[in-house]
Image (cartoon, rainbow, N blue to C red; front, side, top):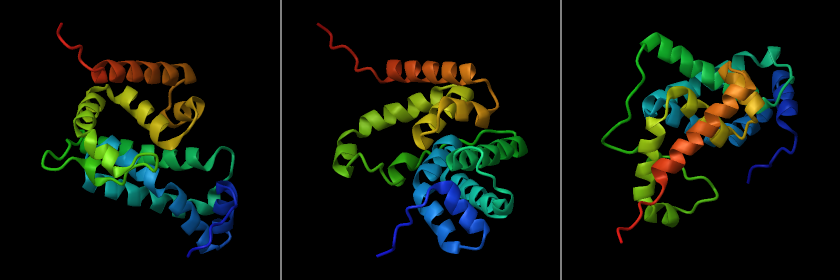
Length: 190
């Protein structure tokens, strides 16, 4: 059984910069799931998400010597991931389309708080959620996914996305309202 390192993320990143490869392995283990889910939801393409995931971690590795713990490590990590995605969009000039043969959400590991049997019973809800999420404007979807997948504060999300904190808050509020409306159970006819 692997031993868990109790150091916080900035301390692990600094240890990694000093040559401790186990510190990087611990950082990777802590953040790989949420980061990967964020990239799959953002790109809507598993192959692209895999590429962006690798590119993000590659940039973390190459920037280790310059890392300064000014903000949370998650802010640093998700800024890199967000920029990798934006760079890809600029290069391709088109937003990727979801694979219609297989739902990417069903291929992802489920969050720890949800059991597979519960998710199976809610397949229709997941499909409605996926469609509603894809229907959000890009800015709202980006803020919503960063908020949900990373646990970052609105201030940190604003910093990552290059908007004011009020704009990030507004985008999150609108995204949540639109998702709620799309996911409300339809009223039974009387």
